[in-house]
Each structure stands twice: as C-alpha cells, then as structure tokens.
Length: 435
Image 1 (spheres, rainbow, N blue to C red):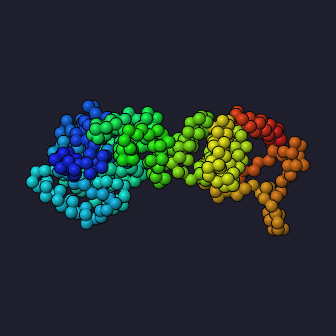
Image 2: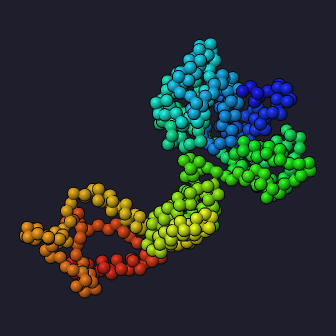
Image 3: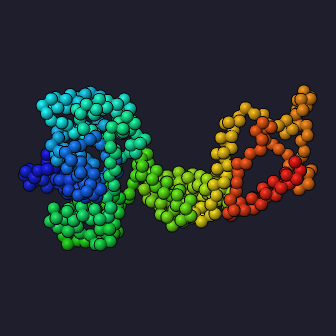
C-alpha cells in the first residue's frame, strides 16, 4: 500500500485510482475531522512525540480514517506495518503474522498489527492476541464500527486504549471536497444547495463524500451545473443509511425515546424521520412508540397506549409512506403528553417483591373454597364482597400475612394520575377507619 504515500506511479495509473484513494493523507497532520486525535494537541500526536505507542482500539463509523491513521502511525513511529481483516482471516493467518512479527522483533524492529473489523473475531481468536501484546511482539491497533464494550473481550480491552473516531462534520467534509477540487483542477458542478445536499448524503463518511463527488464529475456535461433535484437523480439519492445491527440504529432510537420523554416533539419528529429516511422498519418504530407510551406516559394519559396501537394499526392498513404519518402523529402525541413512570417503577418494585416472597401463600380469606375440605381449612372465611360494602370498598388486606402491606405505585401529581392519587388517598383513609 505504499501508493498511499508516494506519487511515483505514471500519471495514467494515478488518475485510474479512486479519488478517495488519491486523497489519502500522507501525514497525521493532514487528517481532517479527527483533530482530537491527530491535531497539534491530539492524543496520537502526543504519543508519537513521546516515542511510545501502546495497543489501541479505533472505534468509529466507516469513512472516518481508521485504516489511514493506523498506517500513518506506523510510518511516523518507524514500525513495520501488517494489516489483516477479521472477515477474511482465521487462526492460521494469525499464526503467520505473529511468526513474522517475532522474527522482525529479533532483528530489532517492532510491528504495528492493524486488524480491521476486529469485532468479527470470536472470543477465542481475540484471546490469541493477548500473549503477543503482552510480550511486545506486536502493537495491536484494532478497528471496529461496533461498540467495543459489547463486542470485545474484557481481557483485550484491559490491554488496549479505546480511541473514538467521530463522523465527519460539515466543515471537514467541505475541506475534503476542496481538496478534491484542487486535485481534479476543476470545481464541482453543483450549486450551493446541491453541494450542501451532497454533504448531507455523505452522512459523516469522508470516503462516501469523495465517491459521490466522482459520480457528479462523471455525469456532468460541459458547463453544466446541477441543482438538488438533478443531483439526487444522478446519484440515485444515497440516503443516510445505518446497519440495523450496529450503533447507528441504537443511537437514533435512544435519541427518539429520550426526546419523547423530554417532551420535545420537534426533536422527536426529527429522529423519527431520520429513521424513516434510513430505511428503518416502520413497524419496529410503532412497537417502540407503544413501549414509550407504557414506560414514560403510563396512566398520566391512559389514551397514549390506545393512540399508539391505533397508529400501528393505521400503518398496517395504509402501508408506506401514507401510514408513516399515523406514527408521526402518535410520536407527537407522546411527546406532548404529561409524563409518568409511576406504573413502570411500581412494576419493577412489585417484581422484586415477587421474587423475594414468591413462596408465600395469599391470605386464606381471599382464596376460593371449591371443596368441603378447603372450606373446613378456612379458605374464604371472612371474605367481604366489596360491592356489598359502603362505597364499594371493604378495606381488607390482600397481601400474604407474613409480608404485610406494601406500596409499589405512587402516582405523581400530573395528568390523569392526579385523579388516581385522590382515589388512592380516599381508599387509604377508609382502610384506616375500617381496619
């Protein structure tokens, strides 16, 4: 891969290479979008200056420069560079790499081993790195788009520092496009709105932005300038897409849930539309809205659950895209509803009590006595039928005798739960009077 750092090829070979490859940085200082790592006071810049590198995990979305930075690190630190991919490599490949690194170390040179998609190695394969990391045979740099906390062994993580690569912002993507224009010797044939649209389409992926720019240059005729509509037609509108099994999916649903909980309908609609635009299954979003209704609104507005179920049914009936409006309506309704986690917290408290006291029998007076023997044992004795009592309330104790009364549900003074609290306080007063 020396072509990344040398321009010694014939001009015709250089022009045949993809633009993203031709624009790879040649030094750490040229890397854009990761100033917290490669800037003047960046973590990696300081490591190079100190003359000491340790093993690292690079975590971040595609197109943020993980592979490029690893290669630049090896060059600036004077290390041999080995690269493998967890997708195409197995135990035999790892053994060969380790043997080469050991031989290299005997001659006085250390190896930086870059492992792309390291999370795809299983636990046993990840463990195989530990001895060569500990004895200094290799400095491991693993790259992953997945959350290392969930996908990598604790033993591996304890020996490597996790460095986070950020998606490219608008400013760094603009910088990449300017470099592309300098390299090509001509401006992108886009008006201002279309250029901004292209940057949005790249969705923080530097490589994607350069690939899209190449498509635009290939499509443009002499003196032609594309507007947004023409750009979308040319590149077939590459919408921001995330892998539903990866962090992008979970980050957006988390943002949607917290926006609803935080009573911000505008932010909630934004994240809902982000997920629609990325190709998320609308029925998955419908299920999540139902969960929000029972977790964060609850009985503060009993209609919330009914509205979410109705929205899900409406989507089933209408399909996409018309049915998406029903889910958007439910989303706004939830965000603007009074909030309560009273039932949610009561459920968790009652579940803990059920696990702790699962062997206790209910009091005999509330048990049915379908046989003479059970009746003789006192089943059903003393039970008072609430509808025959004043105010339709007997005030009996329904908890197991050894457990005593417990309070799990404490409705807040919000929404419909104000009325529920009044009822509970009234019944508590009657219970004290009649006990």
